[in-house]
Length: 390
Image 1 (cartoon, one colour):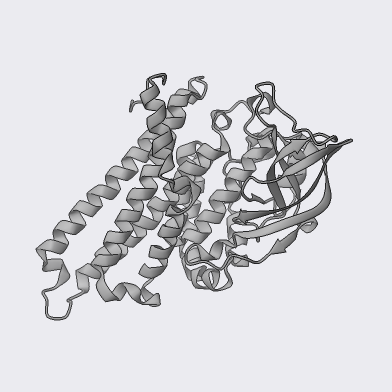
Image 2 (image 1 turned 60 degrees about the horizontal axis):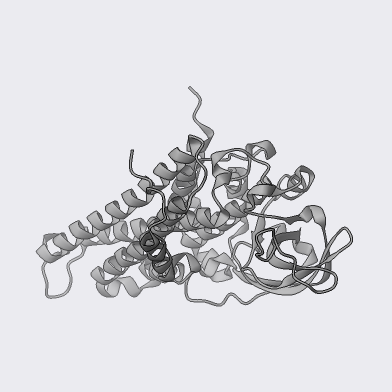
């Protein structure tokens, strides 16, 4: 029997883990993925996990993407972060003219990266012109194309607005060769992501390369994956990434505890306090993972049955992803402190995972404000019934 392509991506990610781990030191040192890791991810189709099948992508279910991220993150958080970022960027193909999508994603290496929303473009005949600089472009050092999320202003300078009165936001796309890259990513965690800045000067963007991303009116695909916004998938993918980091850190602490005898103390494996701490932390991590995946499964089931995305779905995904990132950070903290002075040595990789996990928790997907947004929606009392485990 042939294996399902979606499951195969998870198996491929697991098989690549030894290679990713061997390259992790160089990834950290150079502050970008190594060419051998990038090529392995490309050859195994991992960057195409969320690309529509109509363009040769895998278009996997949300849970499969999350599992892929989790497996890669166990080996190296920076690699998983870049992969997750660029995989979600590929969802833009669902909103593009087919010729444009093929030009971007089906010409090697076919990788798109982008940064934070900022700035504006001016409408001109046939497209737009842009002069701006953007930050936080994870994976940009492997990309062949870059994107930017911008407000649109008309030729006379007035903002273009959607029918509901909100500003029109477009995702402009252009070859990386059209931009100037700025090497600014000197940070304490996720060092290998190469999350640099980039700029363009008076660059013309053809209309076909200015997508109304996450706008249902512009959507060209019918699968349940594209009922989800890219922000929702970012959140769940990065939450799964944090689970992978937490799992690897706790496993390393458990392995250490099996053989370590601290000075003037009994063996860690025989210490009741250590035993209890490991048991509780294991339960914490398993419960967190179960919650995240149950939420993903419930939302996916409803979307697959023809449901449209609702505010209840958005709240469920947001609080599950935010909670998972925070709980994963707590697991990493526990494992780090449990291992004592051993954790501070580079050779043991505890300190890298500690730094990486806290860099993840500082990103937009881990903001405490998400709880406030969810609480406001819940208190308003106008949510549909939230998804429940089947």
